[in-house]
Length: 113
Length: 113
Image 1 (cartoon, each protein chain N blue to C red):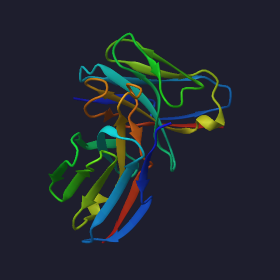
Image 2 (cartoon, chains in turn red, blue):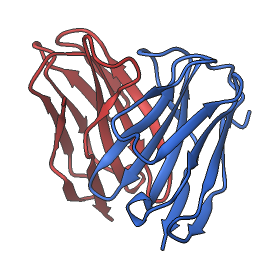
Image 3 (spheres, rainbow over the protein chains, first blue to last red):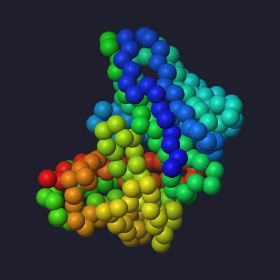
């Protein structure tokens, strides 16, 4: 079946350092979404990318969708303790099962103050 | 607005027992989903309902049944619980299938002994 590979699995940073998580698919995605899950919480939608090469920013967060629509990244500039949590990408495939948003396994971010 | 509400939040079952997880959304969304989340596995789709009156299998449907009771409610039933079904279950909804963000409930933590 389709898979979305996400790396790294864990990332420990000092507060103020940057953080990046990457998602890769072997086949072209129709769109990709990013979610954040705080410890003990539920996933919360951050953004959806649809277009090839798309770049979107939300304050310190920058999201990119690759030109081939097979990879995506989330970059956080100058991390804060409030950024702690697990970040998931989730991709949809052309012609895939209608309901199936394929989630990566997530990158768990910890931030040391 | 409450968003997506799941009950119960915690449940302990013995192997072979049955139970139903309830989910309701108040956002007038057409599509609803049940996911399970296991450590290191990300979120996997169990069943989804694209619209009222329809349900379809996701990635891991075995051992589960669902009912879309009306537009608001989507329940997940375990007929004969197994230890492998120990997990955190999330209900989610979206305005339409195949597009837009998912809104997640707070999750139901199920332990099967």
